[in-house]
Amino acid sequence: MRAIETYWYGGLAASTLSQSLSCISKVHQRCLRFNRTKIKSVASSERSREAVAHEEEEACVKFAFVSSVFLPDGTPDVQLRKACGGQKLRDIMLDANVELYGPYARPLLNCGGGGTCATCLVEVVEGKELLNPRTDKENENLQRHPKNWRLACQAIVGKPDSRGMMTIQQLPEWKAHEWNYRGLPPNEEEEEEAAAASISSSST
Image 1: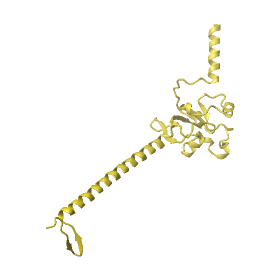
Image 2 (image 1 turned 135 degrees about the horizontal axis):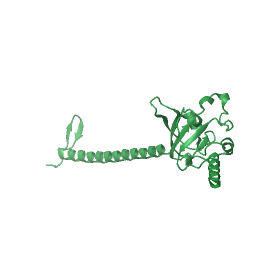
Image 3 (image 1 turned 180 degrees about the horizontal axis):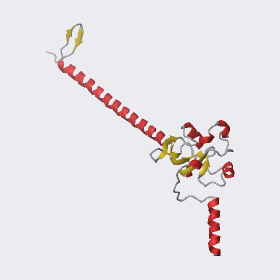
Image 4 (image 1 turned 90 degrees about the vertical axis):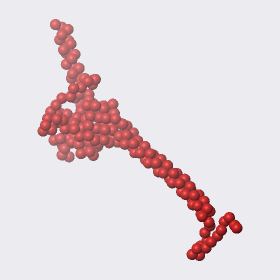
């Protein structure tokens, strides 16, 4: 008697139970191997996408824009934004709908970013190291202002891959509060006053 018998059912040939189970086991093993490989590949793809998304999210500069007036409860009105570096601060603020010009917002009341009207004044409270040095137009228009005051149309925020945090005081000439600065160089007026006080004290 043959160990493997063949029988016909419904016009189709089939092997004995032992041979059928052996084939099913091999197919099942192949499916398991395929499924494991697929799961591993999907997990790797998800990790790669998460890593790329994390890198893209980090490549930006974060901003805290402080309004010149307080909220009704007496607390500062702060707007948080983030943007890619390599742009002018003026463009970042306007794109983010952050008030820049105040009473000079009408087109005929400002130069539109040319650096001649000095109406886009901002006060850099934190993150001044991310900005380019003062331009000649700024040195001309901001002689009597603190060193950390800048023209937003002349201030370039880092590079496209820059990361960091900046705190910007909007409309510093109209602000209703004072910042407590530390480590900022005095402006020319403060230097003159300090020198005059020193001379006066030495003469007495």
